[in-house]
Amino acid sequence: MKRTAIISLTDFNNWNNKHSLSMGGAAGVIKSILPYLTAGKIYLMGITPDKDQLHKEIKVNDKISIVPVVYLPVKTGIPVRIFAFIYGRKINRILNNFKIDSVYTHSEEISYWIKPGITVLYHMHGSANALVKSRNLIFRNRYLQKYWESVRKKNIQKASEIIAIDPLCLEITRKEGAESRTILIPNFVDTGVFYIDDTPCSLLENINEKILLFVGKLEEVKGLELFVDTLIELDRRDPGTWKGVLVGRGTYESVLRDYIKAKSADHLFHFAGPVFDQAELRNIYNRASVLMLSSYFEGIPMVILESLACGTPVISTDTGGIKTLISDNKTCFVIEGRDPVVFAGKIMTVDQYQKHIPAEFNFSSARASLIINQILNN
Image (tube, helix red, strand yellow):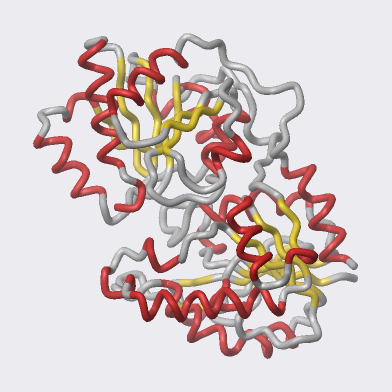
């Protein structure tokens, strides 16, 4: 029986409720691919706020178990990546204890410590240096960023195979001489969960306006001032027609609320909080008119793929691999620059389109799993 460990900075024990320390990103990718993995036993190795759970097996069912490997205090100003790097030193002993045959890693900081002799599939989630997006400015200094680059380089060198989600990631592996071990696979979603659905959305039942939607972490790197300014411009052009809905949470929420208040635009926005139930999230995408991404840095955001799978068009800034791999100028549009007038104009045009998904959706978990299973099981 093949035993696979999935390593990620994800709070697996709480990833379906409001207490979760993680949401989106790698957690979304893992949640999408998990039903399609064929290993006989899968261990989800991530973070926990409960130190007593460290290294202990928590059975989910006969096939899946959770084994927390990183302790992360609920209230801390230290990035989770620092904790992961420290606790990751014990990963080899844990892998041996559970007789792991292969590792599917989404955390450079933990898999950095894995010794040779085991199959490692390294999933790169973006080309940008992870510390560039750190909430604490102290951890954005160039010396720490340089060290993190060395950690990523070590992951590339030791990985059996690498998933690059966009051409920028592919270029990084090419420079490290690992192009032959790299597969270009944009992120993917479970189309058995995200699809066109006319079920009413209970969370947004009191909103009658058209919805400009944001889904994700409310952090500085998301550039949400552009989202706010775009919605205000939409209201200027067509008063009372649009509502900005933000689904998520983060350390930047209070700053964003102050920004909205300073523009006397509180009535135009609704903060829905985080949503962990995928069926509810599907209903939100279906209820929305347009999903907007205003980020400064991204890879291949899961929210774009989830929205497109639900037939809801996407407007995004030009970041990561969105323009080269997803944008088709039919359902997904990339706009250069950060002019809210330009964004609003495009949104009003796109809003006239009828919702649809392509005849062949290229970002499904079922399709990606064919390659991933082959690597992990062989």
